[in-house]
Image 1: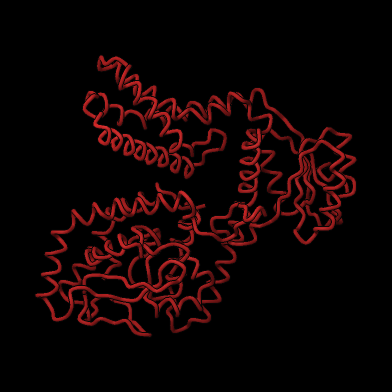
Image 2 (image 1 turned 30 degrees about the horizontal axis):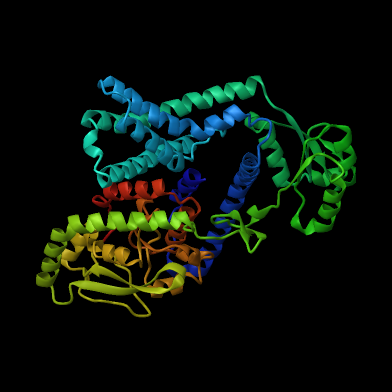
Length: 521
């Protein structure tokens, strides 16, 4: 979704200002509703299929999940990291024993926990291929970091040949990418030649049901043969179907399942049809079919949607922060490590900038302003002062091109983003993150939360020094409602698809574009 959303967002034409807020707002809301409807239409069946498939894999899997294929999907990358080390040791004439054998075992154990996002079964579209490549490279970088730390901590790093280790570090990601590609092609041929077919029917020819049926029909990896629908509505209301796809009414499902060797029944009825669903499930208890309920949860704008358990009760997270459990530890660790390194490297430059700010214009070196942090709590953000004023009231005018309030040195600092360096102190203190939605002044928050639906969702995470919106061209002044609405859409997209690799990619793009960014003034 990220690639398509970004293209659409980048195509938005800015033509109206805040002077006509209400008409623009109505137009923006209509565009947003149309976009979200289109995204739900394309994503709903895919997400539903993935959720069901993931559950089946955890509980033993369908017939298509043959034991050897499932094992390959789990251990391919960890095994290849050890094999890569063995090849490098042999190439340089080092015996693969002793310390090298121990390193191979450690690399297998560490990479089995880090490199667990490679899936051999899904169709890889260009964007998914980019994400998989990025995941492998970042996962291997994390594995290398852990192994290097262990090597220095145990004082065993001197026991290895330098050339072997450097070659291993460089060769492994290439070997992983090539081997995953070959393994995926092999699995695809295996599944195509000897498919494990399970008959499936859908109860409810809804839009979600139709698209899910299309997914079942087109994806051989799912190992299911779609047989048809059951629906109580008049055929004219159901819409066009292929000949023979409408198998009967809901009351006919159980008998059809018993007589026709149906393995899977997918219930796609609206959640309001609970009495009929309960009656149907009770009838299907007299069969051996697996029953799945596909609630159309995608009518909501889901943020980090997942199934969870609270006090023994199953719940569905519709809107949740991506930083829960281990992910929160990973995010905070990355902020502390990278923030500390950047602060050490930038300390001399920060001293020079502070001296320049003090000598170039009267006023404090640092500018402090109230912003909203995680969960909407107020925080104070620090920047090098770039203006002749320090505004933090109920109304704040954003900086504009050739703004008279911006000092000569301040213009340079803003253009190069060097004025943001003190915010790494806020990162180390825990108020901010290196990557996240950019914090807005409290006055702007209060203004836009009333105009843009879902605006406050961006505060489900800590604000960042840089973010997904900024590296996609939405940095600087937001002089129209559409600009702010688009920036918020990028922020929410970041929440939906967060990963450590995405954070690192945003950091790299920030460094590449910040010097030539014309939106900062």
